Length: 371
Image 1 (cartoon, one colour):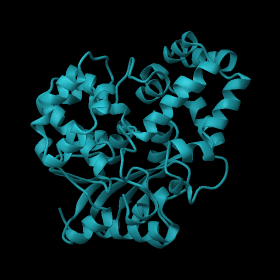
Image 2: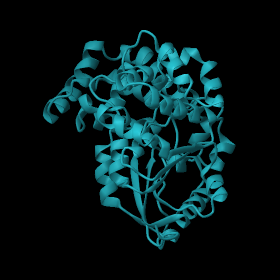
Image 3: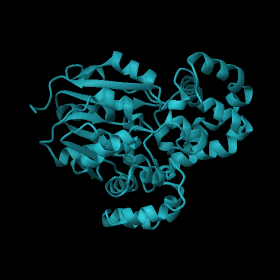
């Protein structure tokens, strides 16, 4: 997170119990390789862990919110201590009769601050840590209070079963896209309701235009052009768990690689500006910036992007999302960063975390020094 975001929003609790950016898109954009130094917004930790699967030399995760770093710390402990199926149970992707027993096994691998955080919140453990954030509770309210007024469970299951592109389009048009869907969706995902229940009101400071209309269009894309049966984000929103798909960090084929590289991951309770000031010689190759630029003014965004460019090696890649506020390299940084528009647009069409309006990929030109 950035310093400006910290000044505007409350970071005293878990905002995101899981990462809501598609790591498959992120990894293809960044092309992380062995020996790379990666800078990553921590959030709940999933995507920082996904970076480890590609064997970088170092992943530096930062977040101003200590609650988010506690989420990352518990995931790291879970990868160290649990088996793959048990990790899925702790997160909430799968049913579990005793998640507190899984937590007790992880507890000894936690530092004191993270251990104290989770010891005080057994109810979050019992429910599955993937649902521990304000954003997940927002989706849960939609799933339990609004969705049943629109569609019966059998219709939800039919949507998530996917099918061919033609079948998905036909089902959405004939069975899903009724008047109540459009009306209640636009109401629940309006700026007013989302600011009260899902995101901090400060995050909407630079948003213009209709929030709900944009998200509704992207939801239609996810239900038709993409396959819901392969979309873990849509599945969690509509059912509260992962049914037939998992995010990258939770897939069995990535578990061992992440576990083997955990010692290459570090995390710090700092803004990006504070991290770079504390390590003036730091140079990185890959940068996962989540959607942090949405929370700051144009001036602050330009200043931070320029600072990042000054710490990037030649050829370094930046990846970040726009949800509601347009942000991309300004003209005054044309000498330092080159947009990868074709790549970004192609990946945006594949993005399973469908509510973002744009995906941005940029490459550093000059660089802050050799590898």
